[in-house]
Image (cartoon, rainbow, N blue to C red; front, top):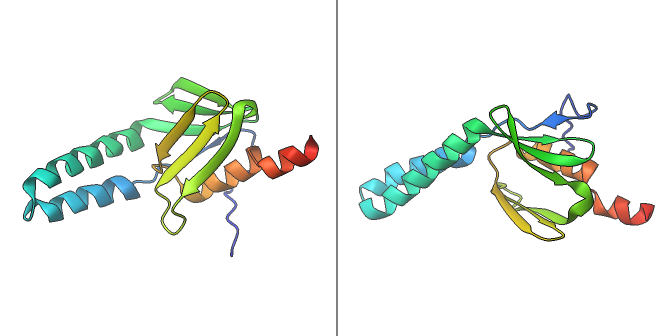
Length: 135
């Protein structure tokens, strides 16, 4: 297994690059489904377009203390690592969903950003094995 280290991993703030894979695949599936099941293709296409818009506008930044979510240049939410209990990236062959649990809530995010950098940042900032060893 090779390890992926993005070039800017030594910085205190790491912004994840967008990944258009899931929105484009959903839109292509909708086009392919159009001839067979038009009513199925419409929700699929709308969801794909919604995710495409989110991919263009939403950014995740890992800082020293929190995961910050930005829409354009405005921070809309911050998730301090001290409140995280667990995280997981689902379906490793082709990552499609990112889950993390805080003390009072659970969050699911589609992978609309670089999954390799996401994994590197999670292991760096939210490595619960290391946290347990440190006390």
